[in-house]
Length: 304
Image 1 (cartoon, rainbow, N blue to C red):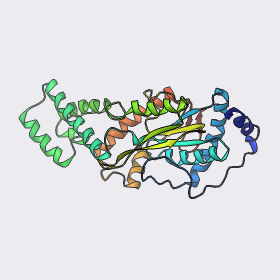
Image 2 (cartoon, helix red, strand yellow; image 1 turned 90 degrees about the horizontal axis):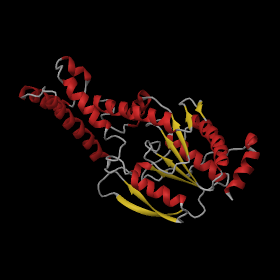
Image 3 (cartoon, rainbow, N blue to C red; image 1 turned 180 degrees about the vertical axis):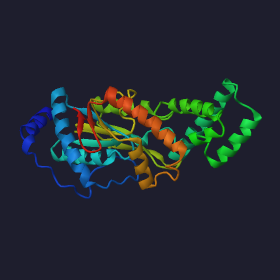
């Protein structure tokens, strides 16, 4: 029984010996993902391991869904890999599930959809406020070509652009991290199947091209813990989470990480900055409302 395993671990928690990281450590199941273990995050993961063991014991169940969420660069992937490794080594059978397999669109199309929503809602806002004109459209045509229509600096020359940006931003808020962008229903189906004791579950795989979509059947017989690693796993739309962990980071840290990884050639653009600000607002709210454990970028436990 899992509770017996947890009791044995807790009895030795003060002197617990963590295994050294190895090359073939488990990580999230996103196709093509590679995790490079950062020595700086090892003590963070060990802190979380101790907190998780105690929280799982308190809850008294025999199957757990643990959500790990935060912005890009907050350490989700590395921390999840280390926790999965530590838990498995301790005899708590754990599977790491990547929520990045569950958007409705591949990254290229999702980026295009975000921009389309911003611009279409911005135009509607101009019409609603009586600020649209053929001259304004000519200006927008040029700004679209330069991809600076979301840049607040442009409003100095074109004050009416504040209306466009305001409504465009509101449109993005209704899309980013919501059902229109992420397939929460399918994630919830997986979590429910796991908690219900299904021994085999078909899990979605998604690459970066439209034809890179498939399902793998994964054996969950004997699995005690499912770790859901995802920017959006702290959302109230995710059902069945037992313990929620937020790895706190700032928009500046997220942007620096994206630039370092060259994940997006326009990572420092005004539009990407807007997207990150909106995502951070949602992360902060979900952290305050839903997180059981909060860990800072420096490894300080802010909530437990």
